[in-house]
Length: 228
Image (cartoon, rainbow, N blue to C red; front, side, top):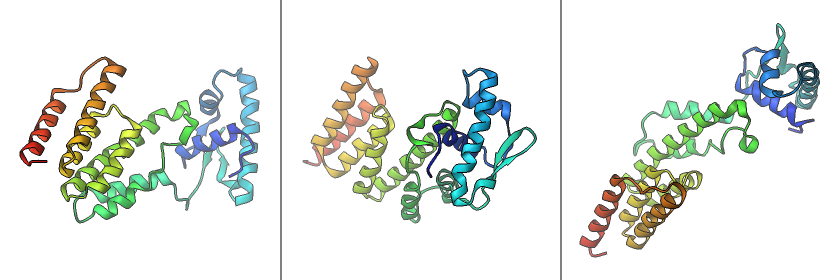
């Protein structure tokens, strides 16, 4: 898409998130044009709706923006929307096990980044966080299944993606430690734990949980007993 203005792109995103529902002009003004004088915001909304329709016209979607009772709605009957498809297929998959792990890996690839990328629209924060949490939960479950198979290489790739998103997520660090333990990598295990201890102290001024320390001691003991 070639958007005429950043506000027309934002208006499309807003209507997409509320696809099929009429959104009143007053709500659009309050959420998208907050801080602007009311009269100016009303005029700007008119201009933005016009720009959005012009942007959609080349791909035959001008009429997808419908005017309804002093509001607007986006009608996309046959569109494939990535975040909706991820949620649909993740829900359809149910619990992840050896029988459907490959299908789960394909579902994970549908999530190509947080909602609306770097735009960080204030009105989308709740939905962005909800979808991100859904993705993290799904990937954690998938990684645990892969570790149990065991397929530590595939599990590691997924866990490193989660770790890059949030290095302070202790559950992910714990799974990475288990991965090192399964690989017999005592050096990697120790580095993973000590790096996390340093990060927690530097960023939050606290130590990791007792549970993580016990996990570390258990994994190190297991490797020592195995002669690795």
